[in-house]
Image (cartoon, rainbow, N blue to C red; front, side, top):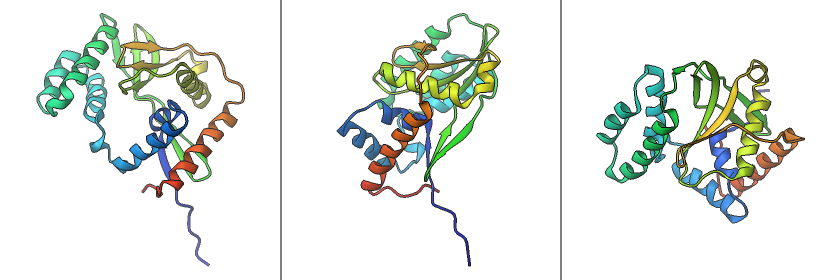
Length: 211
């Protein structure tokens, strides 16, 4: 008798964050948008900017260097928003001493959903370790979404938290770094509930397992 593994749907924490941001029918629209890109990152509007920011920190380059390189190769349609985000990020960094380290990563599974928790940035800022998610949508995160995501980071990386690492979310649309949230009781149950809601919509809209 041959054994086959259960097909899985692999979703990043950032994708789930977009889902959490909405209520009602807008959650359905968020899932439809994911289906439209077929998880091809080259189709995602912000992908070149995200990759650019990671490479910038890894190589120790500046925001101005990244701006010149990005705007020379991306569609002019992206220039206004990319410019705004880079200006905000440059202001946020200011004159701080910043160096890169590889951020922690892990997976969480609920039924066939595999949630990939991959913070974008590991940065030592003025001597203190920060593990950071980048929020790249046009609208700021809701307070509830921020609280939920920060609690997730604390939950999934307890060793980093115990070592004094600061977890944060950078909103590029506002240039703000958010690090404070109230602890949420029963986080695992809340996460399971959101995962169940996501799977119901995904399957109803004709989604299929990811490779």
